[in-house]
Amino acid sequence: MSRLKLFSLFALVSLASGCTGDIIKDRVDRGVGFADGMEDDELYFRPRPEIPKGDVAVSELLTLAKRNNASLMRAGYGALLAKAQRDEAFAQVVLPRLSMRAVYQGRSNTPATRSNFGGMNFRIPTGQKKQFGYSATLQAPIFSLADHIYRFNSAKLNAKSAKLNVRSVWNDVRRAVVQTAFDILDLEGQKEAIQALIKSLKKREADSEALSDVGMALKNDVYRVQAEIANQEQLLTELINAQASTRVLLNTLIGVPAETQFNVIWNANIPEDAVAPPVAAAFKVALRNRPDLLGLEVGKEAQRQLVYTEWAGYFPRFDLNVDYQYADADQLLEDDFFQYSLIGSVDLIDFARHTRIDQANARIGQLTGQSLELERRIRFDLERGCRAVANELSRLKQAARAEKASNENFRVLTQRNKEGLAPFIDLLEAEFAKIRDGINRRSARFSYFKALAELDALTGVEGYFFKEN
Image 1 (cartoon, rainbow, N blue to C red):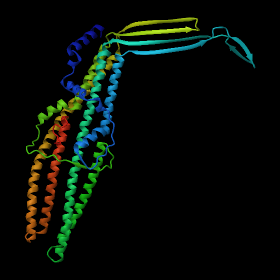
Image 2: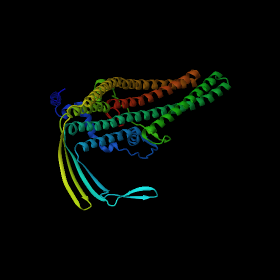
Image 3: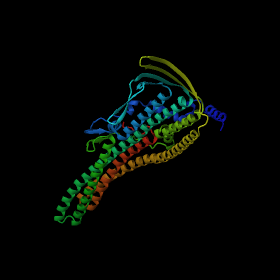
């Protein structure tokens, strides 16, 4: 390909794209805006040894996670690394470089004499010439289309993409913290319900044994209660172990010692008019706000800038060199001078450059496929997430109705059992139903808030659906 064709092609690309701001599309603009809105302080993570005690709200857990989570810390320092690389690119293409060099040397300047000692010959110089000198060099890039514009733009975009990755990691960490906290609350509620049931069963065991001794109850009733006590105690053990392991997971997420003990509290209620959000609206929000999706678009633009960088490498570049040198030879000759040069250079053909262009275009294709895959997965996850909210709202409503009915059924059967009109087994089953329906209602409440936290993560907007107040 001739130089004229190369320049024409690059001119057409530049004309079609305009300035850098015209190249970046809406999603890239939003990604850059999000990254610019992040303060650098958000990237410096200094874990604080604050151990939660007593009652801890979910918002406090999120504050601890933002300070101490290891994954978030790693992402933050990755963004700082990208920022330092951006600053390095700026220094290389804009700032001058000053260096100094000093030399001291001596050499023989008169014939050497020969000497023989012990059968060995030596050459001993009879004089020496000394020389001292130093030089200072200033190198300053004047202009390079490839470096001053496109390469530096690529480094800036990579730094912004790394910042968006911090947001993406926080998005996942926040979801995990909220959902794990609600898992603990759910398990705690189940544990308390089972403990109350075991206490009630043990009382019924004593009552049924007393009635059996006087012939007013069957021995089978006693055995049935004893079997249920064993089953519920095993369930209680499983709940305790599950809660302990879940607590360790939560402590890991918020960056505190694994053995830390505290109570998670949550007092928010579900609004009476709560409804599941429409999928289409949530998907639009996600397309505009998901940090990982925006980061992919910014990364693609960074690769496009590398393509432009390689094509721009066929344009001339100009550099300025300024030298100052001083030399002193045995104080007999002194010389110092300035020397400056303006250097222009141009690549005529570089086959390796075209392979780098192919690599950048291939990476753009990879990121495009990754972005498309992520969009489709977001759409599917939002469909499932919005329907999960609808399911939990329906479950909560039906569980409340079932709990109310089972409580009334238990009350009636308790009275009838006292009057000898209802068998003991019916009363026992009614009590199981009352406990089960109460657990289901509480679990539906916590699952509803977990589903909202999931939607927040899917849309990429903190507090869009899940709010503590």
